[in-house]
Length: 99
Ligand code: H2B
Image (cartoon, rainbow, N blue to C red):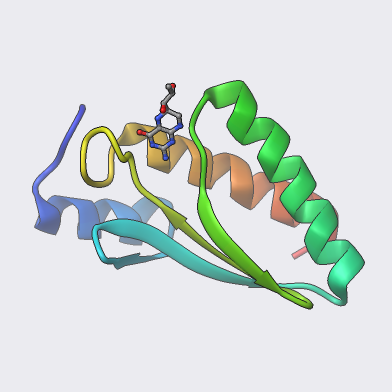
């Protein structure tokens, strides 16, 4: 699956990534941590995974918050690559925070 129609994407996000939203043709989520060190540890782990996948997040950090936006730039929207990276990010978040 390379590109998908939008209503289908929204449905898939509800099923597979219930804590994520679709925003500006991207998968979007804001993560909260206990402090900056925990947030930055999360970003480091995600960065290494993203590099391995050759698929990179658009993100920002402010103290204990990290907002992540995932889209496939070359496809101009959400693809399987974004779902896969979001799944990996969820696992990293769970492992790091126990949430
Ligand atoms: N990340 C994302 N999110 N979208 C892309 O289209 C993309 C990427 N392309 N990471 C990759 C890198 C491409 O630029 C390199 C050359 O593989």
